[in-house]
Image (cartoon, rainbow, N blue to C red; front, side, top):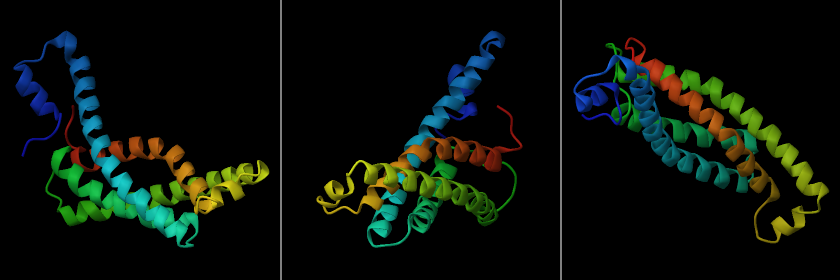
Length: 177
């Protein structure tokens, strides 16, 4: 299976690695892999986002809606990115790796959900102070839903980078770039 932007593919394409350009080649390989991971994560984020918005609109608190949505998204990303972006190192089973990833995600998603809920509360306070809640509600959208998804958009870049490096560590920790 061809891995998007893996270091071995870069070395094969280049045929040889010049000593002066090894750091640049390493950076380019990681950047290419991150781009592929970001694309797959974007699809997972859409799944996460739609789940969260639906649950919030249905009345579930932002924290729990984000938590459930995030686990749908990260599970999708684990399987797709694990197959197409990362090269599995070691002999641990996929089930073991998934459990380790979910343990990481319990911590990461809990922190991101708490931050998302806090930012949502702050945005809701600003929207209410500006008199915008009636305006948003006029479109049939609960103001808390708008504030929750806006907060999620602000938190996502940080979780994307953290998840890339954790998956890289988890799947390729015995390899060096």
